[in-house]
Length: 364
Image (cartoon, rainbow, N blue to C red; front, side, top):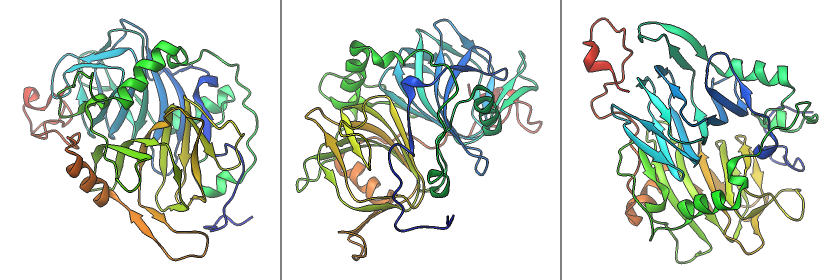
């Protein structure tokens, strides 16, 4: 089997996804008080994705994000009491934490569950914040899932072509959004703009306040642009997908979590996949068609790590390319306020940097 790029790549079923409701919660010694449902982890880039849970009253302090992190609050709420990230962030909030951000304190106001993408390790400091006590890396995630018999989602096309063994882990609790009331709150947060309370914050946004960007020629699709990185080309979105997406290649990878409705996905079941299913599309993956199943709005989060190339069928000329440039233009046209990529004064350096005053570099 070739491990090179294969333009006829056409595996079957859910090779690039996982039902997060079925995954067990894992505890890790590096992160006391934090539970994870690991989704994907990379040895190559150090990135990992997971559903994270903090029980009400849990406090994490202090820690440093050695790589950036983005997150979507699925249920509950949490608070950063101080610093550039300060505020209470409820269900429906999406945020981006820049690399090197030092978190002095974080606490869960309720049981809180979030979708998190960590672009690098997280360092947990000792109580006075002066030294690293432990580090959580993608390798720790990989080793923990091997120990528990949990299968991570493949990272590449070649990995997607390999058989996926059944998980050996015992099934734990579903996500809180399995409850209809919780899911209704989240889908309102993802799909409505007229009854919302805006989280007015440079690093977090209440997705209810983000306007839909809609092409009048294709009204079945709407996009809420949340963040655009001109440095990396990564774009974060919420997508309303009520039509049929034409043939396209993922020139860069992408991931998405279904919030409402059902999606028809490659050779999956006729009923499609519903809320709580998370997908990772490796770079080079092709879709000849992706569509909504049923009448409910199909809405999902999406991180797009590179351009999408559209055509009219295999072997036909390129019809269009979507990159961060087009997404930023859509955000500007719709009046969306994008989440910031860095702290305004770059006050995120580590607390023990000797050339900086401690109070100037603490950026909770």
